[in-house]
Length: 220
Image (tube, rainbow, N blue to C red; front, side, top):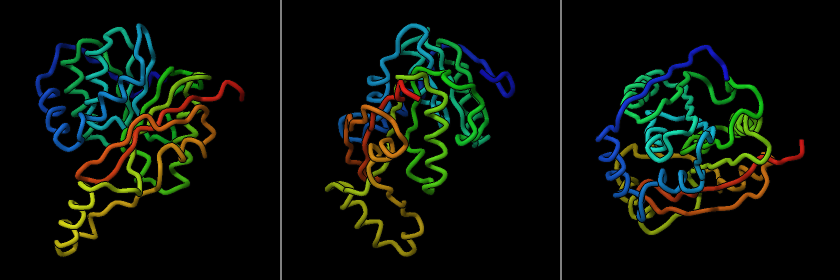
């Protein structure tokens, strides 16, 4: 892995992570997406996991509690978010490596990771940038490595429609709406990943979303 911008921090459990998970559970019926992502990640001893767009590091901190011997790495291009992630990582039960970096230029050699995740990262990107990020994630995954993506989808649900109607009644609310890029699973198919499937769908106050699971092909 790249040596520059590398930060290792460790410590004990942060109680605020549990509060954050509980609050997210109010938005996502059935529980937060992080639990589903980590379930499908299948973390084991020394599993190498990369979280692209790690934000404030909540997913990585929970992964550290779930499998302390996993090799956990996160990147984000938001300096403030990385600062918060480093503070959170200090209370994690095992080291977390964090980089201030762009998702379309990952600072790692090819075939570095067993698992890569991207939670609400790709859907907000224009198509060329999204393709570039997916290409980079495919590059740094081992052949057969797992990719887990959670993102918004165009299809709605009752909760989302009620929330959207309420927001639409607010002046200038359209300035805050998101563009929906379609199904996350289709993004992964278009990027050349294998064994693509939709593992779970969500109906949230912010809109409909899904968890897509795929693998990097073994063949070049």
